[in-house]
Length: 595
Image (cartoon, rainbow, N blue to C red):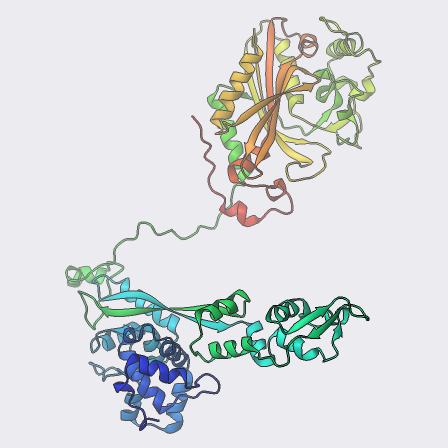
């Protein structure tokens, strides 16, 4: 082959046509002809841009680096012959052999004798993995001094998919189905049971190979509509596989059928930079005592500090997002002049949780399907409740007073004594307001709490049986609903939640009452984040609160604002067994958009 073809004298298009008619894919071994042609092409691969078959042959040869080395060893080629089969391999400038040098040093040594190096061909020439070579190129580029310039380029080719390979081996679906149908035809119901019948039948009908007789006496029958057919799909795929020229329309047809897939090979073209030299002067990373003693620090170059580099991760504990958001909420309350209430009791009795709030004992919220009742001890002692206040509450429930009719039922102390897991922190607010009512002289107050509450809820993306409640209470003379809306707007604006809606609602212990909604961009809907209202006189006056004092209050969960700020769509990903611990370790610092 070497004697017949003078590759160096061939024009690019002539060489491209020669390789189009030459099979080199299956069972191909590295030959002397390949070595000669490789030497010609690798010197200037840009010359062959647009020569599809030359480019494909070049990629194929680059993948045979190990086979090439085995061929050299088997033929016991001497040093001169080895040099001819490894184009561009010159004698090192120093006494070092290439095996003694690092890969980046080899690149510089070879580039000194060449105008340009293509990374694909050079990786094959040196018998190294292309990605390893790319890593060496990037390490040289990272050095100060502009040793080299590197331009990233790419070659695009087509490769057969697994389905395409099966077509080459067995034939296309339509061709196989055509051969299955006999001259007498086949019942459609039997035909459609064949492998890939649905896809192949449509293609065969379009090509006019098969037809369907719906009026056949035995039922709908598939018959041959053509005498002789050629599997053109297989022929096209064989051409693509052998890197032959194929019309663009046919290539696109094969692509639509997902029989071929594009393969993009990226590589670097390397040329000498303004500061090119074959020796690498690596900058010093540290200033040592030896440099200071012998004065060598004066002539050394030093690695620049990378101020954008991340520090080494420190092993430590991590705050849960809820704790971070809780800290921000607490800070906002304190900034607004609120005092924190003591909320260290999870177990509460029905009196403070329900009755003191003017919530009737028949209310559905007091049923087992909404509230967790304590089995041991089931009841709290009567001595733990203020007797005179209990009597005033009982009277208000049964007969009303203060302009109210009450609920007109027999109030039972036994129901009030039942121990429960508190359903809201308003039970604590009730205790604090009772203490406020016992003062000789009323003083305006602002209170808040953030703690855990428990409800027998159905679990879903926004509800848990155990969650945190945030509550704010303001007691002062002549407060109105306008004050409540103003305080809520200012409070939530400090949280960065400006998309708010207020909806009228009913609560047994507040009148008027409002539900608070905020828009959740993740769920793309309005989510209830809290409840609010003005405590009823039936609740406040039995406590001893003056009649001209009004109390506005609001409560919201800690979890839902946290979900909004951290972009979490399911509350079970925030609390519970489904929590990803990496989320706890990697979640960002909470910075609410306060004003």
